[in-house]
Length: 340
Image (cartoon, rainbow, N blue to C red):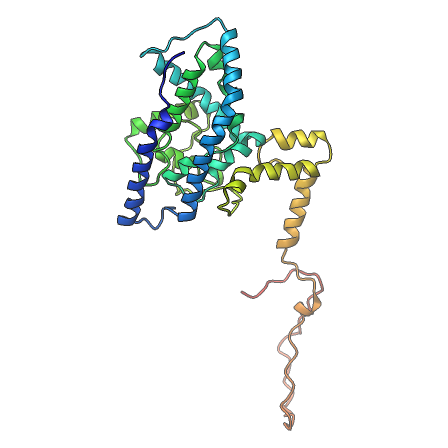
């Protein structure tokens, strides 16, 4: 078995130092347009990161067992050498792209990954906001094991990929020289990935390299300033709810589903998918809430003139010829324009 270091564990001091530098930079040179830091948000992200370390230890037990069994079954072997490691990392990054993309387009996988996108801030602590249910990731790396890469090497490569992505979670780094931006995942590319605008959704899935996105049509360059978070934010700093809110939503949808076909769609289609009858109900409900039709006659009738003051005598004025015919009163239920 190859003896490889734990890349994430060895990088923790650098994580702490770089986060402190970023925090100080916002103090010394604030940016009103940047999402910046929030104390509760940052604390939640750090808590999610610490929790993920403990939960990953639990998930590693069955994953290592499966990987080891597959490794023993395959006749192929890839030695861990100075020149094979870059090639294995290239293959791992390619599989990471598909794992990452899959966790955005399949709802039951999104329930795991949504944790990482749940912050409305974007800073280095956002990189630490990791899921507690990463058991859904391992199938994507089975091809690497079947090609003869030792499970310990797979773990090392995944750690290297994760460590690389730490620095791209920042607004303090602008665009880098064009050759770097063309090949590598950068802060600019990853800001797009964390944005919630329609044109930015489900884009830039690359881990270390952005060339996979360019090859498979999922690349979008950063143009307008991103708005971070989810399309429907959860507005909570409770780590347990952050970790489980999408699973709870799936459970509610499954309980309300009409048949097994709907249940399969709710699990394996995209995160925004709903059955046709439920989409129609939502449209009708939204129309009822936003339709400006005024149905109450009292709202349409002009206000009555105030009564004359007590003791006052009515003043009779000479009749004036009508300048134009009177307009008919508005019919009940007719659309009217409300005063601004």
